[in-house]
Length: 234
Image (cartoon, rainbow, N blue to C red):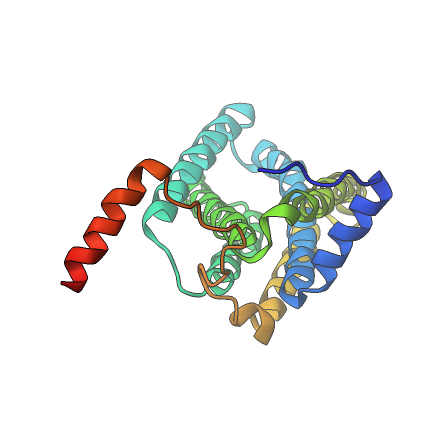
């Protein structure tokens, strides 16, 4: 493949930004993921506090993190088989399990119930990531994937420490239970709103036509192809 023309860093940023804002579903999805990561950070800040106060502290938290890991594996296995026709509708529908998990954690449930809802959240996050990254690769031109992905990761990585930094002071001010309610709303409402957007619902699996030209047959295969065409015509 021919090497792409070199551009300045700012030109690459501008080109990637244009690719993002030219797709309404992409802008809306990044906004929803930003609020989701905000709440996800709050869970990892306040979850250990809930376990310390109402369960057996670090040992139970270790069990819950192990369950979370197995849930992620299960979600990946499901993603290998489940290929929804509307991937973003499926992604954001299952992602609604995350704010519901925050609500469940706020009630300090017994360990088994805590583990069950956490496993569901892990499955949902794994499936959402699978559908999301597959959709990006199918809908964004190959030469722009890295630039669009850089904005995707920037939104996720910048917002995560924000959620972690405000969760603690907010919990000190109003209590961890109410704080988890707030973050559940911050995560759930944008996801529900995105599901109502037509641009998100219209994205279909694998409907992006490849932009790379097909590789021509090798010279060694040409005589065989010509002979086959003659035989077919005859």
